Length: 279
Image (cartoon, rainbow, N blue to C red; front, side, top):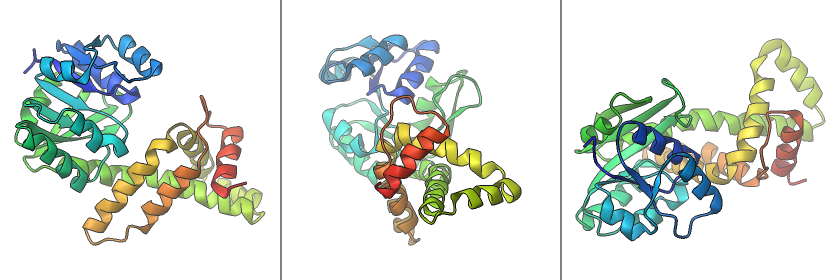
């Protein structure tokens, strides 16, 4: 499969970076510009992706389709290619149940489905990005990334395992970001923020910096992390575990303002905490 044409739906920051990696491995990577934003077009061009124009043309040309989109759109994006007969890889931050629903859409159209979950940052160097895969065709998809900076790891032949892995990982990384912001918001509302920060500096010194990084992430990505928190909550509920914490995290990220080029600084934190508190 190393010479397979790969269709990429739809190249955001992560998707474009993954597309560039696949190109570096010798694959032709195409995307569909119809209905997409100018920002998406710039990312695709920078990654060296070829424009197929429409999703229909992308589906015709691609032997593998890779979906990397906000989690709330995963099912809708799969339905755009209903009837596709190749290998469809869903690498979105969704629960195992949502992944299986996506797989059913693809299977009904005669395609082969591979469940995937991306852990880490957009790939720019070795050791930053893991791609977990599950499903009967997972080894073939892993082969597309052989020798690249993306560490592709096959978990099993069971659909849902890769998505569940992503959910468990993000439950901690993004869940703790929500928690530290909510705690700092509470301290501010109680008039005790300075006292809390002084205690943190003495007893848990990394939390001050963590809260600044969390605010930057919330301002940049909260608009799509809220749906991811809901998918994580669904994963917990399906396992019979309490889901309320991540439902609250989803609400926190929904309240976070969407800022352009936010920084990990006090100004960004102040804007995020005011948004969380509704002030």
